[in-house]
Image (cartoon, rainbow, N blue to C red; front, side):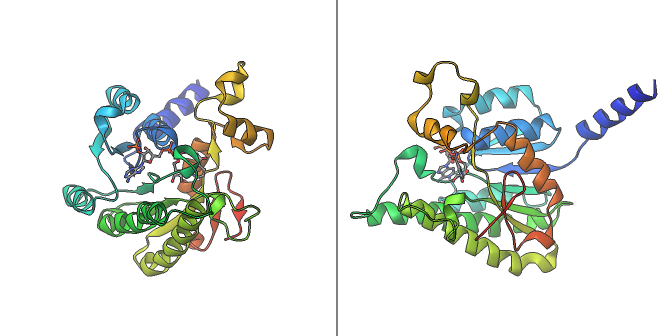
Length: 265
Ligand SMILES: NC(=O)c1ccc[n+]([C@@H]2O[C@H](COP(=O)([O-])OP(=O)(O)OC[C@H]3O[C@@H](n4cnc5c(N)ncnc54)[C@H](OP(=O)(O)O)[C@@H]3O)[C@@H](O)[C@H]2O)c1
C-alpha cells in the first residue's frame, strides 16, 4: 500500500513537471531521441527541425505527446531564429539544447589535402556562429526559467588534447571553437544565473546496432565504433538528461561526456 502510494507520487512528480526544453535538429538522430525522452518525462518540448514535413518520426512523437510542439528552424537563418525567439519571448525555457549541427561523420567527412575552404566555412558558421546566435537570441527565455541552462552539444573530436589523427579537421575545429565560445559565454551570463554547459554526447546507439543480428545492416563506421567500444548505449540520452538536471553554474568550466566523465578541453 505504502509502496503503491510512493510509486503514484513519483509518477505524479514526473508527469506534472512544468519544465520546458527547446531542442534544435530534432528531425533525426540524437535530437529526435532527446525529444522523445524529454517528452516521456513529462516535459514541454519545443522540437525544431529544418523541414518538419520531412521529419515523420518527429511528427509521430507530436501525435503521441500533446506537450510536444514542432517548429521549423534552420539555425543558420538568423531571421528565422530571431522570429522564433520573439514568438517565445515571455515563455520560460529551462533547457536550450543546441543539438542541431553539421555532423561531418554522417554527411561526408572533410579532409586535408586540400581542405575545401567553402566547406570549412559552412561547418564553422553552422556549428559555431549559429550556435552562439541561438544562445544569445533565447537568453531572455532561458533566464526567465527555473533551470536556466544552455547546453552546447560538442564532441570528443573537439578536444585539442585528445587529437590522435587528422580526420575531420573542419568538424574538430568547429567543436573546439564551439567549446571556447560557449566556455567564454558562460562567463558572460553566469551572473544572471544562466549555466552554459558543454557536453560530448558520444555516438549514441539510436538505431540499436548493438543488438543487430545481421552485420550487413550495420554501417562500417558504426562497426569500427563498436569494435573500439565507442558506441554509447541508447540510454545515454537519458543519462545526459539526468546530467543536465544536475549540472549548474558551478560546472561552466567543465567539458562533460554523456556519462558524466570530465574530458580535457
Ligand atoms: N552521432 C555522433 O557520432 C556524435 C558524436 C559527437 C557529437 N555529436 C553531436 O551531436 C549532435 C547531433 O548529432 P547526430 O549524430 O544526431 O547528427 P545527425 O544525425 O547528422 O543530425 C543532425 C541534426 O542537425 C540538424 N541540422 C543540420 N544543420 C542544421 C541547421 N543549419 N539548422 C538546424 N538544424 C540543422 C539536422 O537536420 P536535418 O534533418 O534537417 O538535416 C539533424 O536533425 C551534433 O551537434 C553532433 O555534432 C554527434
